[in-house]
Length: 227
Image (cartoon, rainbow, N blue to C red; front, side, top):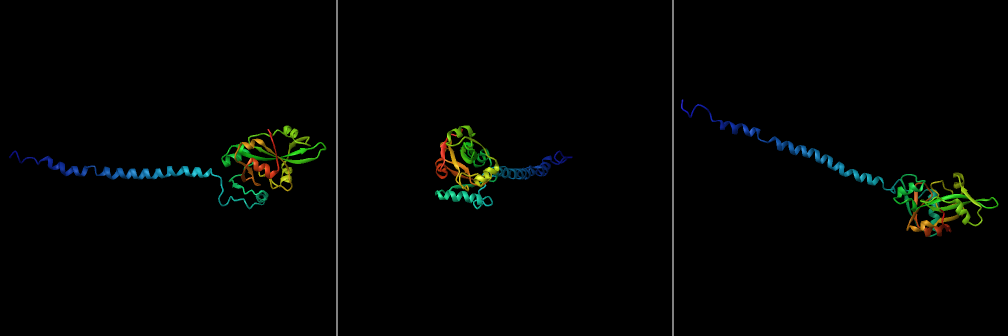
């Protein structure tokens, strides 16, 4: 047997088998796994923040417009007499406290002009409503304001029935104006620190933007330190 004939050259087998083992499967699987995971998660994560942002925006679109509500209309009509066309904001939830209103609007409680009704007693025992427009950051000092007001012996808190009878509004929606009869009004001087303040507009879901000077003018109120 010739030395050149006994065994078929092994190099001939290697090229025949290697192409079947060559990394043809790696390019086929790697792009598939990348495209299946990255596009599926990236859009989902980037679209979530806008939804959270819009949820905190006050609801002012269709379905929350309360300008036609009778109580709100009374407020707007009275303001119109004083040539005021307010910026009215309808809120998604009722705001019956200064803290709740401030959080919904995006301001500080001090920028909320609370419309608080009290009972003013004179020396003869006659009780009349007293409207105090105070900063939401303050607690009204009833003894102090009684001492500062002429003809008032003392001042105490009013219940919900007294508030509605005097103003025509439910607690939480009492506006500075729009009452059945004029109400003696005092305005917290601390509201003058702010360029704009917000007051209830006759409904617990509505507020409007105003100023310290405008509140004094439309209510014929007296400036007093109430705290």
